Image (tube, rainbow, N blue to C red; front, side, top):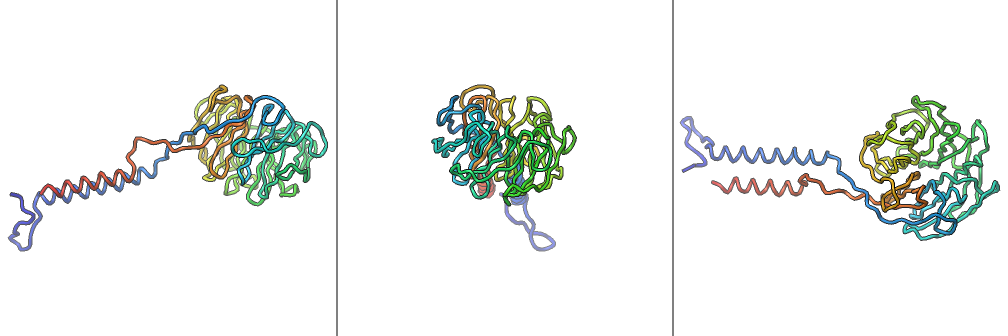
Length: 357
């Protein structure tokens, strides 16, 4: 018979082997539980993009597109699409229902010559990169013309094919001045602040930058098209880091065009000729990829623009298919035991140990 205590010749009591085994077992279980749950918490959770809906087809009518290059989402969830080769902007609700459109080919106010970039500022106004007119135009959310700035050239506030626009939390605007291989920064009224970049492949240099995006900390991400990489800068243009090279593997690109950042700081890149979207951390660590060449749901033909709404839904300008696709990100169940399951298992083991007396 096993006793919990034995007499000790020196006085007091000693722990028997049976109780010592139980105590050691409990300590081991609790230790494994603690270290296991900490490890589980530290593991990145796999994510799987889920197709939600699509809209658009090739044409010139409402809800039709001719190679849409970019898109943006306002705080109401409305989606503004740069219908590039139709020289206009179309607005939709989050379900793809047509709301309005404006613009025709021309050089006048409210006219465009290839709309390749669109952004929404902090007050809900719409900014358009009027690319081949070498200017930026600003409109109300209803399409009412508000202002314009820019002209062809290499000077401050001049452009050579401006491709995309991003707006920070202070309302400052960043323009990918693609043909001049630089980024220009402006106030909310279009006053020039600063610029950075030159032609090349070194740090802070560009070869036709296309996409530009801002995170919550004010950092600037640039899709460096011909250098097949993403570069990250401070809001003043100080180089921070870069990632990417030419190829089809994870973290590689074939001419990245669009770039967007979600609320958690994750970076999404329109990997143009790889016909996919890639997702990274803010430091460039690869997280996920989806797509492939085709016209089916979740497939792409040279996707460019990427936009993310306040709920985390992802909108993609599926340029070659002349349509918009919408996705959401769902956590993928993994093979690891969850924290709550681990606790249940641990309690059962401890109960079994003490039951055996």
